[in-house]
Length: 376
Image (cartoon, rainbow, N blue to C red):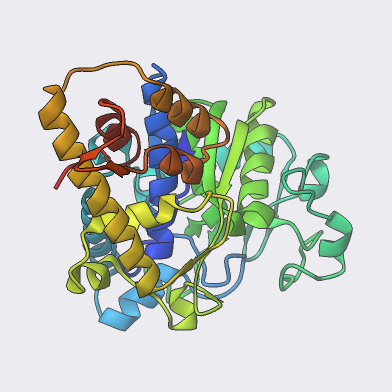
């Protein structure tokens, strides 16, 4: 499983963290079913422009200018914070490979060279571009319309581009570029899209089972990944694409650009346990947009406390002996039905009968493994 990770030019807000909890939950369900999951989550430390397309300033340069620090220092600082946030959310980072884009420049150049040799790329003064018209299936993910893009709906068209959907594989270095490398096309830096294809290919092979990311990646980034990967290999790139919906705050998408970002440090400063945020995420289906509020988080925190109390009591009463149960079966069935976490939570919600909990003996411990895997 490959997951699109952060661009580490700044701290990641809780919307980005929802995108990390999501594939972690998928992996837990697979592991519980007996599968071995090999996971990759990339760290983008070069190539991602502020427009998400092929024009504008590189986000790493934006971070470097903001903090008057070299891009590699910015990348190290915010990668460390991101990994610490994942640990706080009980994501097992030891089981995930975290490749950095700057560590795979040779692989990105090699993939771009392959595409050029196969006739899928053309050169312009500002870089090497992928020719989307040579890949007949371009836009198949989400049914992206090439005609609409040709009308200028998606991108600001660079001079000489054959089609508006064509995207850069390798950029020619500009005078003030802080990150640049030698290539067959001269000094430059990679486009954003090619890093995921190159790193996935290097670490997982040309064909993978599951690829995750946010819904905003479907139209451009993931269709570009499909095009360059399948054009190079001649094989299906991904068998199952899974995308999580946005997190919003007061009706706006949670994003640094809108000025309404909330961070995990904000959550803990208000004395909420980090896993309260994870529980909050799990209360909505991953494909459902979720609205964040501090009241909603408080509700999730209360539900989590009740579950932990029930878990401790049941563990003490049972001596932690494992036993099959109908509730456990329903929990698994819900999770295996398109990762229906809201239904799974309903199945294990503890209720008291008099002075004791009526939850079957094993359920809360099993739930903790599947969805949270930590007790206070």
